[in-house]
Length: 218
Image (tube, rainbow, N blue to C red; front, side, top):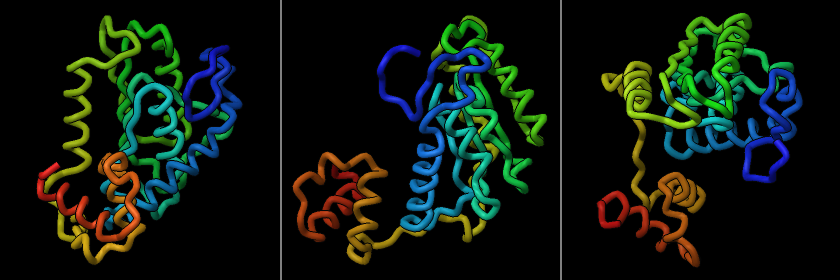
């Protein structure tokens, strides 16, 4: 859009045609896939208990990635807030993922990603085979989030991630001392504790940090 800024992929504009290339989006999609794979491996959380969710460009990437995951890694749902379908010419829905629930929340006064883009995204994705794409709009809301939207997202998550799941869906919490250094580092990263692990050299230091986190000492 003419300004350098942190992003998942290049945006040259937000008109109907300028999103066709989205340079870097495939690399970002693959990076998100890698994060999901690490989460599944390190926490034993099954893919059908994962929801891809993001705001603006993050929401666009959640849609682009979530509906193109391999069939055996089908997610519980996708949420995009103030997002859109990017790189439409590079987007197809994986066979078997047509019924993945999609919630698209969008402000009616959004000047960045205009409501028409949200509507066109819904139409395009449904035409490609999506069976459950719900678009919710919010009067007077710009490129932002409000409490009504948060409530709708919470209700959606409660629906697609019910608490009464069988044992096969429960996350296995390993004893930190039995985790590998790779697993410990992944846990620390996902828990937002990377800053507290700076300078760590010994496995025992990582173990102690995870133990303190679980005990609520941090």
